Length: 135
Image (cartoon, rainbow, N blue to C red; front, top):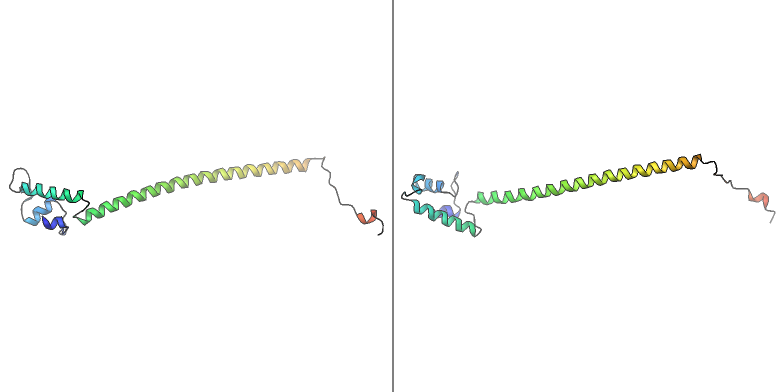
């Protein structure tokens, strides 16, 4: 029991009653009901619970699993934020393209109006040297 709670987990085992029974060379059912080793099971579970409440994890795999689950949650949150940002930027791009198209259409319309207006007189520069006498 002490070895398991210190984190000395045998290959293929966990920090649990099954591994405790296997390491002790006792049938696992002897730890349940009113069998001879019931008090050892409750002591083991109490000590394990105490370790877990203080933040210690005897089984390094359990700690690794908890860390990996936290990493997964963090990555899921980052993906969600990235997806939201992508959606916002895609919407902004669509709006910008629509504005540019509307501005282009307005420029083309105004050019057509300006080209078709007959009231616009083009002023040509005059030759000033002929109208002005010698200096």
